[in-house]
Amino acid sequence: MSNSHVKRHQSFIKPTLFGVFQKLIGKGRALPAVRDQTRQRLHFDPADFSVIYAIGDVHGCHSKLLEAKQKIFDDFSRYTGTALIVMLGDYVDRGVSSKDVIEHLSRPTPANIKQVALCGNHDDAFLRLLEEPDLLPSWYRFAGSETLKSYGIDVAYLLKHGDNGAVERAINDAVPAHHKKLLAEMPSMLTVGDIVFVHAGIRPGIALPEQRDRDLFWIREPFLTRGPELPLLVVHGHTPVAQPFFGNGRIAIDTGAFATGRLTVLRIVNRQAVLLN
Image 1 (cartoon, rainbow, N blue to C red):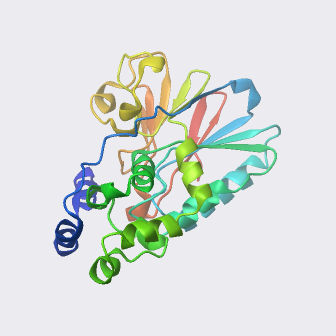
Image 2: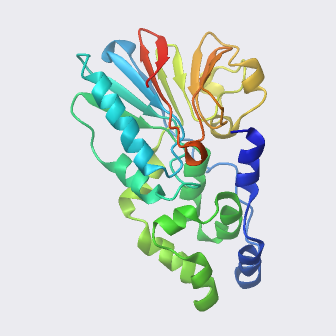
């Protein structure tokens, strides 16, 4: 899948519906790049885990997430100790089952498996909508209708038949409190020894404590070309690739599951990374 295809998908919105937004509730405020609050950053000891698995961008593909998890459970049966599963963010939008993905991430994992769901730019944007409903027009232009549809919200119908607050009330009623809590508590970075897990990447050459959430969620260049420029290995998603990319101090595993049907799982043992087939 080409990057140009993804850009077209990201920018697509039905002009008629967006025109309804503008007419009924105005243009609204621009969607900020990130929430005001800096998110938590986690640090784990590599000795605590016998194997680490990373899963690329899910984007509402609940069935593919379940398949990926089963692959992990089957693979981990060959190991002892504790496994770490790192989700690289972007659980909502594009695919049809965002609600089911968030609900899945809210559930506990087996006792010998620890899971960390990192925040992606789409997850952060969805939380901003939940916290500030007047961002709806700009959020909708960015995210589209799929996530709200997964929660049973027909935006076009509500805008046509309800008052200006109908969509806001529907969102407040439809999104469970534990989903909002999960979105709010997602960390922006995880380090395990010298391996860094983030959604998008890092600003090259900048020490990790000085990295901004905005870059962790959104960066492409110069990170994609230059890599981290630090003695680190960065595992990330965000920028779709036709095949997982290994090199330049980074591993990219967003294979565009919502469009390709391929949700990539990476296994890391003793810092050796391989794809899980």
